[in-house]
Length: 310
Length: 310
Image 1 (cartoon, one colour):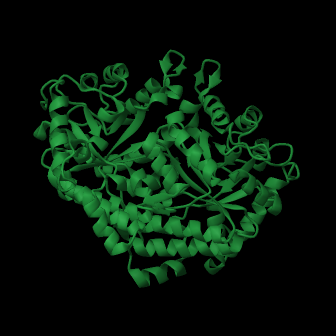
Image 2: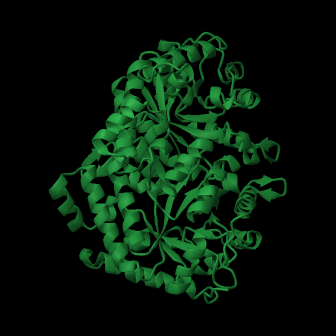
Image 3: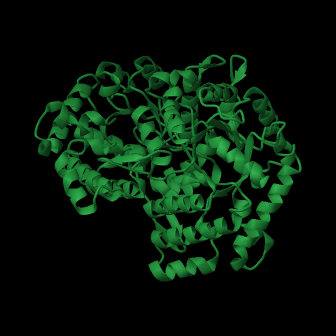
């Protein structure tokens, strides 16, 4: 069970957080960019190389204190196929350092097409008799608007290859309520989606009580976090929106169960740009990222029950 | 206005259809694969090269009779960054032949992340002072579950760069109703999403009455196609599910307005695999694709009003 692996890493490090690697080129220190521009000119190749160097140096500094990274696909696609190559190399590097990798792609489609996404990000691709991992993350974020046809192609791969998914339930943005808070009979759309997560996960529940089908529930809506925690006992939460978007640790605590488990909280920009916030030397960016990660760990864990494996 | 451009191509060719390029390696004729394996072994490079050759040969045969292609991102991601490079090269090639390109990615996110997807697929990416097109499609399919925050980052790029989006409204799959048919007060979820499309598009309406914000409405639900056509007068439809999924031309006709405009119908596998269905020599695959495209054009246009620009 993928979330058993994640939960054990969280317990070992006493740290239920994940670092979002969403690296706009603007976040990369000048000296790294200058070196890449020197080699490749001002091209997508240069951007992709600079971002890979940046990511690796952050991973080097944080992999012993943070259980997971969450690269956001959009920031790699933005730099073309060259950027997508950096996504793959970032995933490989993080895994080589023992980290759990959640690709944030919010993918969605049906049937054979969803199978293709599942193969791409969590499975293997057949090239004649060869089976090759295209991206090889441990988990993928997905969007459930299309219903079961969009999710079931993932469930087999989750079982066979020890992988997980996080389905968007209640997102952290301001307008998430336009659809998600609307009522279907007596339930909100997000509660209906949450129920589907429990249903999709019910045949693949791990030893700590959580299934391979997790949910994205935003840190900016503590009341809904609490409601969903109570309603979805087998659903592990990925919680975006801490820090920059306004979600505070006290509210986020509601995402956790009585053993301090059941959720992982993401921070992206605050970690990647810690050196800018601190105002330290840009060459110190990775150490600044580590300091921010440790500060965040302290902040979150001071609000939740002590993490213990049942 | 992107859909003005598309509509004019449709009128010129009298053909409201789009060919989905969703190329699994299994669809590629053996002689093309053999050549690629010879050069690169059984690798993702070989798969990506074989698929590019396949795509280009189909485009060569159909670009004078079909206005648009719709590459599905999943089938390129499945072959790693090498496959994603083939996506870019396919888009470039189709555009060089004058085709309109719809990238089917069903992307979704919020704020800066959605801006990154918009830049990646429809806009340009800044690398220092250089601005580079990462993928450069004419339109992108997107998922609106996150609400306006997920769509508004696209609207500026649509205006500035003459691009369009298609938002999932009522998808063609069997389980699409699990969420999309549920009632919010007196309206279905898909009708609520459709209304949002009209709202998002209202400031960017082209000369044929359609905005830059289109909708995906499946061919497999003719009644809902008709309902949406009546409810969403400014929303251009992308209609998947013709043929293989069971959507017939008579039902699809309901997606069109009285001038035979307002929709474009997709076919993927039936075109790519026409040579298998026909049982002709595999070297004849591109000509078989052309025959299927012309058959489909005949089938669809025989059920709709004669196409005319108002």
